[in-house]
Amino acid sequence: MIIDGYFFNTLCNISFYTTFVPLGAALYNYKYIGKPLKPIFLFVITAIVVEVITGILNWMGLNNFFLFHLFTIAEFSLFSLFYFNFFKRYFNSSWILIGIFIFMCIAFFDYKVNGLESMDDFSVSIECVILVLYSLFLFYYVFQKLIFERLTEEPVFWINSSVLLYFAGNLLLFVFSNDLLKTDIKKHLLLWGIIHSFCNMVFNLFLTIGFWKTRTR
Amino acid sequence: MENKNTIDSSLIIIATMGILFLVFFIIFIVVVYQKRMLASKTELVNSEKEHQKQLLDASLDIAEKERQKIAVNVHDEVGLNLSILKINLNKLVNSKEKEVADGIMGTSYALIDDSLEIIRGIYNDILPKTLITLGLVAAIRVLAREINMSGAAEVGIHCTDEILISDKNMELQLHRLIKEVLNNTLRHAKPSFIEINIKNVENVLIVAILHNGMGITTNRIKELAGRSKGLGLKSIFTRIGLLNAQIEFSIEDASRAMVVLKCPLA
Image (cartoon, rainbow over all chains, first blue to last red; front, side, top):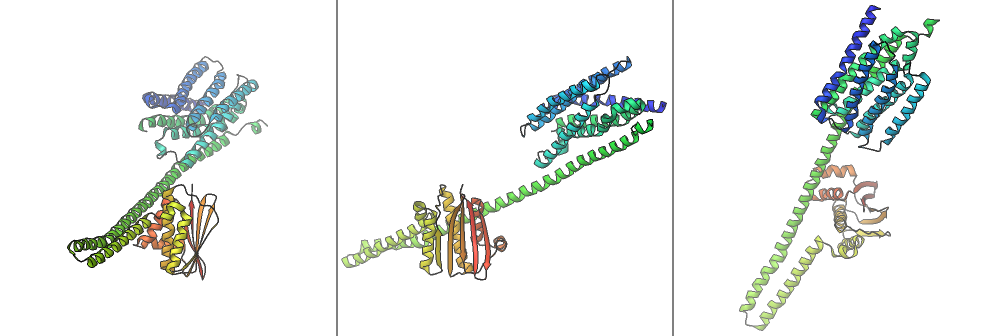
C-alpha cells in the first residue's frame, strides 16, 4: 500500500510538473502562436490554475470535484475552438460552435444527475468521444486533402496527436471513474496514477512540440 | 459477491494500452501515408510539367516549320517571279519594237497574276477565308471538296447540328487539327473512302472520321508519336493538348477504321 501511495504520488507529481513545460514553450514562442493555437495556450494556463487550486483544496481536505465540472466545460470549449479555427479555413465549421453549446447542456445535465460531490464521468466521457472524433476527422481531412507538405513540422499535427492520445487513452478511466471511486478508491488512485499520469505526460510533451513547431514553420 | 461487482483494474489497463497502441499506430500511418501520397502527387505534378514542356516544345517546332514553309514559298515562288519581272522591266526599257514590248508586258502580267495567286494561297493556308467567314463546318467542306477534286479519296461530310465557335483561335486550331488528321489518314491509311460526321453533344464538338483504309489504335499512335521525328503526329497531340480535347483511334473491323475527336466548346 505504501508502494502504491508512493508510486501514485510520484507519477502524479511528475505529471503535474510536466504541465509547466508546454506553458514554457508557449511563452517562449508566444509571438509565433497564431490564432488557431491561442485556445490551446489558454487551455494550458487553465489546466495549471485548476491543478494548483485542486492541490490546495485537496491539502485543505476539501472536496474539489466541482472544479472538474467547470474544467471539463472549459477544456472542451477551448479544444473545440482550436478545431473550429483550423477547419474554418477550409469549410463552414460553425457546427463545432453548436457542439460547444450542446456539450454545455450535457455538462449541466451531468451536474444535475451526479451533483458537485462526484466526478463528472458522463460529460467527460462524452467529451473524450467527441474530441477523439474531431481529432480523427482532422487527420482524415489532412490526409485526404494533402494540406501540409511536411506534416510533422506542423504544430496542428502535434496538438491533434496530443488530443487523440490523451482523450482516447483516458476514455476508459473516465468512463469507470465514479464506479471505481465508489467501489475501490485506492484502485482508482492507482489507475489514475498509471494511466492518467502517463497520458498527461505524453500529452504535455506533444503540446510542447506543437508550440515549439510554431517557431520553425 | 463484492469481487464480482468491482471493476477489474488490470482489464482497464490492458484495454487502455490497446487504445494507446491503436492511437500511436494511427498517428504513424497518417505520417507515413501522407508522405507517400505527397511523393506521388509531386511525381504527378512533375510528369504534368514535363508533358506541358513537351507540348510547348512541339508547338514551337510547329510554328518554326510553318515560318520556314512560308519563307520557302515566298522565296522560291514569289521571289523567282519578281526576279523575272525585274528582268522583264529591264528588257522593256531597252526594247524599241512594240511587238516585243507587248510580249514582255503580257508575260509580266501573267507573272504578277501568278504571284498574287501564290500569295493568296499562302494566306489561305495560314488563315482559310472560308473558316473566317463561314465557320468550321464550311471550311471542312472545302477541305473535303479539295480532296475529292484531287482524286486521293472520296470524302463525304455529314453535319446536322449547328456548330458555333465563338473563340476564333480555337476554331482555327480545330481546323488545323482536322486537316492534319485527314492529311495523316490519307498519307498512311490510304483509304478510298472517308466519311466525316460532325456533332455538337452538350457543347462538346464530336468529329468522327470513318474510313476504309488501314486502321490504327490510340496506344499504337501514341507510341509512334513518341518515336517519330516528323511533326504530323506531334502537331496533332500538341493541338489536342492546347484544345483540352481527346482523340481516339480505333479499328472497327477489317475494312473500317475510326478516328474520333472530342473537344469541349466552352
